Amino acid sequence: GQAGPIVIATWDAGLAANKGAWEVLSQGGTALDAVENGVKITEASQNCCVGLGANPDRDGYVTLDASIMDHRFNCGAVGFLERIKHPIAVARRVMEKTPHVMLVGSGAQQFAVAEGFPLEPETLSEDARKAYQQWLKDSRYAPAINRENKGHGPAAPARFDNGEWNHDTIGMLAMDVKGNLSGSCTTSGMGFKMRGRLGDSPIIGAGLFVDNEVGACVATGQGEDIIRVAGSHSVVEMMRQGLTPEIACKKVIERIAAIKKEAAKQIQVAFIALDRNGVAGAYALHPGFNYAIKTNAQEKLINSNSHFS
Ligand code: SD4
Image 1: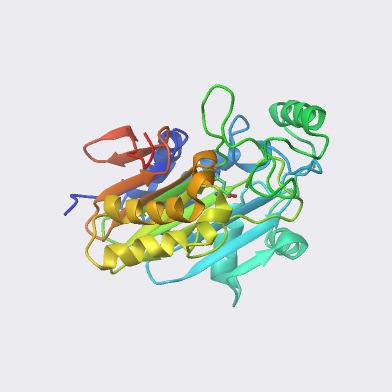
Image 2: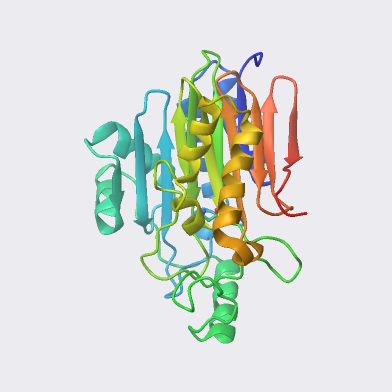
């Protein structure tokens, strides 16, 4: 087993986020507080891919999704939330202060405001404004790069010209000193998506799943293809059957590859998982996915193995 607490988070932004989680974990705090505090750092950063600084939908509005789950199957989520800086904190309030799991759209915003979250201005960040202007110019609402949905779906290129994958999400899993697991996920979804589009991130079982008896999983990448295999729940169920976190992630990635066939070349999907003993693992469809790990002994980025080479 793992000596002491552990936190893992998707992509390189996970390094900074893990520091936020570690402030909590190193003081003996709960995994739930850690995964909220951690991804809030990413939500607040204006030069990243998550939160109000992120790319807008194709109508020019930033719409945010988030979910959180603790070690007792308590969970909360928000979808299509606008003008709120910390969707993960609102997701946690949904979990703790309502009889529901998920609130969306204007109702989620109304709840957030009632809970004292400030309504932020609608303005795009400088980077997002530029990216949107560029997208409008090239795409004219008939995106050529969108292979998945014939022009009606997410319109952002899955892979940039420099070969890097487009990513707009942070997912985090933590185990605290008591050995309890929690997870969080927060995203602007997919840049230039259709207005109203929800991905996997706010859907418990797709973007995030935690079963304290077994382990936890969080997903990133093309949300549509994570939802159709109930991705994170499937990974946790594979771990229940005795597979290691990495092999469990790999099995579900292979399932997605088999379903998508040729189209699998155009999308990225990745899972990170943490089992109840504090063993971490990950697997991606394509190379280029990495995740950050922090324990008492180490703090680093790990390159994930992948289905394609
Ligand atoms: C979504 N899974 O909304 C998210 C996007 C993502 O890195 O993970 N981007 O589909």
